[in-house]
Image (cartoon, rainbow over all chains, first blue to last red; front, side, top):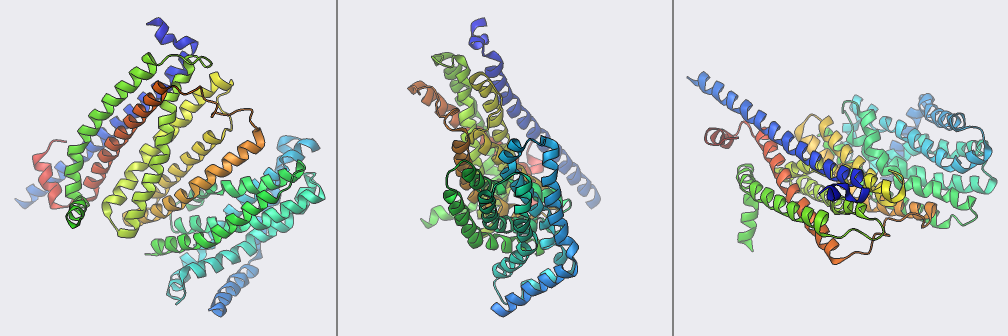
Amino acid sequence: MTEFLAMGGYWPWVWGSYAMMAGVTAVEIAQLRFRRRRLWQWLQRMARLSRQEER
Amino acid sequence: MTASLFALLQRDLVLTLRRPQDALTVAGFFVVVVALFPLGIGPDPEVLRTVAAGVLWVAALLAVMLSLERLFADDYRDGSLEQLLLVPLPLALLVLTRTFGHWLVAGLPLVLLSPLLGLQLGLEAREIGVLMLALLLGTPILSLIGAVGAALTLGVRGGGVLIALLILPLYVPPLILGSGAVDAVMHGSSAQAHLSLLGALLIFALVTTPWATAAAVRIMLD
Amino acid sequence: MSRTRIQWFHFTAPANFYDLAGRLIPAFALLSVILFAMGLYLGLWVAPPDYQQGDSYRIIYIHVPVAWMSMFLYVLMAIYAGIGLIWRIKMAEVMAKSIAPTGALFTFLALWTGALWGRPTWGVYWVWDARLTSELILLFLFLGYMALHAAIEDRQRAANASAVLALVGVVNVPIIYFSVQWWNTLHQGASITVTQAPTMATIMWVTILIMFLACWMYSIAVVLARARTEILERERRARWVQERLESEKP
C-alpha cells in the first residue's frame, strides 16, 4: 500500500493531478447543487407569497 | 455604391483629422511601450536585437487594441450608428469601410513609425524592411479582428477591459507570423513563408470578419 | 423521418427539456462514476509503470482525456451557440451557456496536470510546448466567452453576442493551434516534444478511452444539471414551473 501511495517517488505529481481533478469536480457539483437549492427555495417562497395575496 | 462608401470613409477621416490627438495618442503609446522595454530588459544590444521583433509586435497589438473602442463607440453614443443600419447597403461593407478608416488612422502610423523603433532596437536594414512589410500585412488583420470585439462590447460596462480578454487570444496567429517573419530573416532564412501565410490570413480576415462585425453590431443595437 | 423530427423539436420546449434532463442526469452520473472507477483502477493499479518515466506517466490517464474534453466542449459550445443564433432555439442558447464553465474547468485541469507532468519529465512546471500553449489560449477563449455573457445584462443580447464570439473563436482555434505548433517547431527544434510519449501499450489506450468516456458522461450530467437550473431561472413565471414547484423536491 505504501508502495502504491509512493508512486515510485513521483507521488507529489501523480496525486497532485488526481487530487486537483477530484477537487475541481467536487467543487463544481457542490456549487451546482447549492445554486439549484437556493433558486428552488426562493421560487417556492415567491409562489407561497403570491398564493397568500390571492386569498 | 462606391460613392457612398467613399463618403463614409471621408467623413470618418475628416472627423479624425479634426481631433488628431486620438491618432497621435495611439502612435505615442506605441513608441512609449517600445521605449520602456530596454529600460526593463537592459541595454545589451544583442539581447535587444533578439527581442526586437516580438517587442514591436506586442506593442503594436496593444496600441491597436487600445484604439478599438473608438471604432464604433462614439457613433453608438450619438446614435449615428443606428442610422448606418438604415443605409441600403450591406452592413458588412459599411463596417469594412469603417475598419479601413480605422486602420489608416491607427494601424498605418505604426507601420511608418516601426523603422525608427527598429533602428533603436538594433535591427538591420533588411530586417526593418521585412518588419514593415509584416506590419503592413498584419495591422489590417488586427483592425479587422478587433472590429468584432469592438462591436461585441458596444454599450457594455467595462467594455475597454473586456475587449482585451476577447480579442488578444485571437491576435496570436498574426503575432506569431509577424514577429516570426523578422526572426526568420535575422537567422538568415527567408521570410517568404511567414509573409505568405500572413497575407493568406489577411485575405481570410477580409472575407469573414466584416460579416461577424455586422452581425455583432445588429445584435447590440437590437 | 418527419416523426423523428417532431420528437426532436419536442425537447426544445423548456418544460419537456427540463423533465427529460431530470431523468437523464442520474443515468449519466451513474455511468460516469462506474467508468471513472474502472479507469482509475486500470490506470493506477493494473497498468505497469513505464520503463522510462516510471509511475509519473500515470498522469496521462487524466491529462489526455481532460485535454481532449476541453477542445470537444469548446466546439460543442460553439455548435449550440450557432444553432441558438441562427434558428433562435432557446434551449440551444441555454446549453451553450451551460457548457462554458465545465469547458473552462477541463481546460484548467489540462493545464494543471500538464504542469505537474512536466516537472518530473522535463524538470520544469511550464514549457512553451505547442499543446500547453494552445490549451492556455483555449482557457482565455472560454473565459472571454463567459465574461462577455456576464457583462451584458439583457439576456437575449448576451446570448446572441457571446454566440458570435464563440463562432469567431471556433474558426480561430485551428488557426491558433497550427500557428502555435509552427512557432514551437521553429523556436525549440525537437529538443522537447510531448509526442515522444512512452510506447503506447493496448492497456494504456483502453484506459485513456475509458477515462475519456467517463469525462464525457460527467460533462453531460453536469451540463444538463446547470442547464436545468438556468431554465428554471428563465422560466420562473411560467405555469409549468409552478406545477413542478408543488409536486417536486429540489
